Amino acid sequence: MPASPPPAGSPWGRRIAIVATCLVSLLVCCGLAWWQWDRFTSANGTFQNLGYVLQWPLFGLFPAFMFWRIRRLREKAEAQPEEPAPKAEVPAPRPRPDAPAYATDEDEELAAYNRYLRELNARDQQAAE
Image 1 (cartoon, one colour):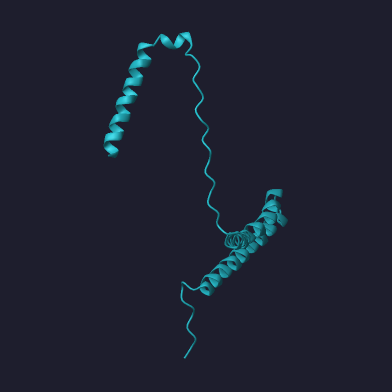
Image 2 (cartoon, rainbow, N blue to C red):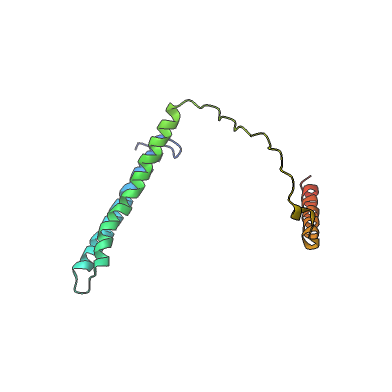
């Protein structure tokens, strides 16, 4: 009887899938780099093709780097005990200086707009309840 593959939820199954994805992406991107090298060495090749030759392997290594980085961050988070987040201190309100003279002259359009905003806020508050 052949050995059954590990269940999809097991850590080994996930690791195998991640490693396979990293290898496939590296192989595909190296193949694309080879294709760009062939284009660069052809008669109509440009330096843009040479740039792609250098970029494709980096694209292929990116999934492996991300797996390594996520694993490292997860290990660091598990090693550190969770501390409660410190509460931000809210400063006491400062006394408001006297309103300037121009604040006493209320613009009619501004007053109408503020009334409209108060009505909208009241409707939103009623709808939320």
